[in-house]
Length: 567
Image 1: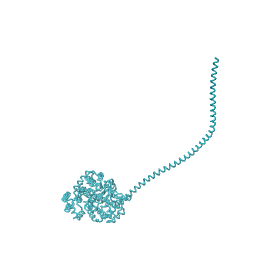
Image 2: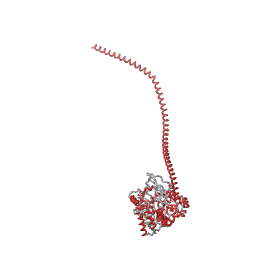
Image 3: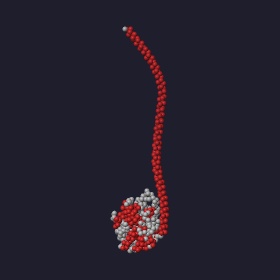
Image 4: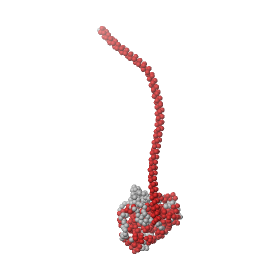
C-alpha cells in the first residue's frame, strides 16, 4: 500500500504567548486542566449534568479516498486542513450514582462498572467451533484463493483462527513479527474481530445491536451533526445520508444507548470509522464493545476520562525516563502531555495522521492491549527528537498535533518496528499507576478540602453580605432616626418658645382678670345699694298704686253719686 505523509497544512491554532494558558488548561483534549490531571472521579449524582467536557472535535479533512471494508487495500492518506479543535465545550451526559474505577494496566484491562454490560456474552472455557470461526475460515480461504497482493501465511492464520489463545501463547514472537511486517489488508478486519470478539458468541451482540437501533438516543442530533466531520474526503463517509455516514451514525447511536454512562463522545467517530472501513456495522459494534471492555479504552471517553488522565500522567513520567532531553525541553516551554497527546489517545492516532499508520496502531492494540499507546507515543517522540528540540512553544504545539508522522515518509513497517523497540516494563507501568492513584487520591482529598473551604467561604461571604446589607439598612434607619431626633428637638424648642409666649399671655390675662375683679368688687356694693333702693321704690310704687286704685274707686263712686244727684 502506498501511503503519502500528511500534507503541510497546519490547524489554525492560536499558540501566541498570551494563549499558552489555553493549552495548559486543556484545549488539547477534554478536561485537560493541570488541576485535573491527578484528579480522581467523585461520585456523580443523577441530578448533575456534566459539563464535564468531552473532546469537542470540529473539523478534519483527509486528502485522498478510501473504499469500504470490502477492499481496504486502496491507497488511503490523510491531508490536514483546519484540524479538529479539542476544547472544553460541555456535552450533557446521563450520569449514574457510581463512577467506574480506573482500569487496571494489563493486556486486557476490565472495569467493574462495565462488567454488567456484557452479561450474556460469555467467554468459552475451551476453544469452540463458533459461527465466527467458521466465517473466518471461509474468509481466509477466499483470501488465499484470490490474493489481493498480500503475502498470506495461511497456515499460521488458520491455526490462529482455530485456537486463538493457544496459538498466541505459543507463537507470540511470530505474531509480533507478522504484525511488524504488516497484517494482510484483506484479512485485517477479520483478524481485528478475531482478536476481540472471536472469544465471544457475537450473535448475541449483533442481536443487541439490532434491538438498540430501534431505540432513541438523546445524543442523535449531536451525532448527526458531527458525521460529516469524520474523514470527509474518504469516499465511504463523504456523502450525506450515504451508507458510510448512516453506518457510522447507527453504531455510535447504539453504543450511546448501550453505555449511557459514556453516552456520546466525538472521539468515538474515529474509532468506529476505522472499524467500518474493514467490517459491516454489526461487527463494528461488537468490536467496539470489546475495545471498550476488554482493551481498556472505555476510560478514555467516560465523563471523568479516568484512564486518559492516567495515560497522560504516565506519558509525562515516561518521557522523563526514556527521553529526558525532550522532557526538559517541553517542560521549559510549560508543555504537558495533555496539550498534545490527548488527541492521540482519544482517537488512537486517527486524528490527522495517515490511515495506514492508524491501521497499524489498531493492529498493535488488538495484540498488545491499549498500553501499547504509550510505546507508540514514545517511539514517535524519539523519532522526532532533533526536530522537537529545535522548536519553540508555538511550533511545538503545531508539530506535535499535525506532523509527528512526517519523519516516517510513509514507511509504516519502520514505524511498527520502532514501536516494539521501546521497552516499558510492567513494573514501571505498575509503579506509575500506583503513583498516579496516590497523587490522584491526594489531589482528590485536597480538592475535597478546597471544595469544603470554598463552600464554607461562600457561606461566610453570603452571611457577610447579608450582615452588610442589614448594617447598611440599620445605618439608613439610624440616619432617619437621627434626623427625626433633630426635627423633634427643633419642634421642642419652638414649642418651648410658644409655651413661654402663651404663659406670658396667660399671666397677662390673669392680671387683667384680677384687675377687673378688683373693679367689679366696688361696683357690686353700689349695685346692691341701688338694687335695694330700687326695691324700696318698687314697694313704694306698689303702695302708691294701691292707694291710687282706691282713690280711683272712690272717685268713681263719687262720680256716680254726682250723676245720680244731678239726675
